[in-house]
Image 1 (cartoon, one colour):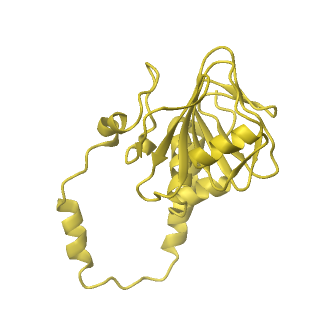
Image 2 (cartoon, one colour):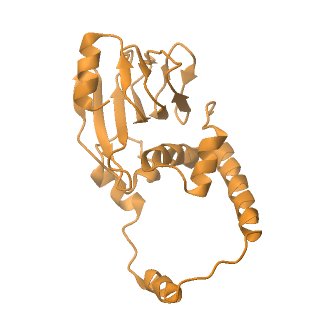
Length: 217
């Protein structure tokens, strides 16, 4: 069961196409696995369509039809399902990466501490976005930290508790400077999360601050 979902403003931004690339990837990754949020998104898209019907007609450019037909005739890009796995680090057996990462590339898994690895994800539409994959071993925990901006986390595999609540596979979390937490993976198995960091992560310890700076967090 999925218990934690994106706020309405994120789903509204996704429906309108107004989210930046990094935020869009995180939100879309959640919607893929969440029936409840897919229905919420569909409702928002329908509402947006009704609003468009009430707008005054706009004049198209003279070459609009020609450009549209050219786009229709253009060869299709490789499907996300066929190419995603080749451009991202290997997941655990039986797990698949979200299709929202289909256009993204990422580094190999990199060591950040005992039982902890990370991978930097590049979003083509937003290459400066701080998007990461975090792979944390059973019973391990990240350093205590807060955030200078928005942080989004989508749980892809496993479970963690950060002192506020339990987050399992499919859950979505949004935090900011008002939250101080220390995510700890449950002893039952490792946890993999997709994360977006909108500002700097503010770590409590000197070593954690140094590692965070080296990772670009």
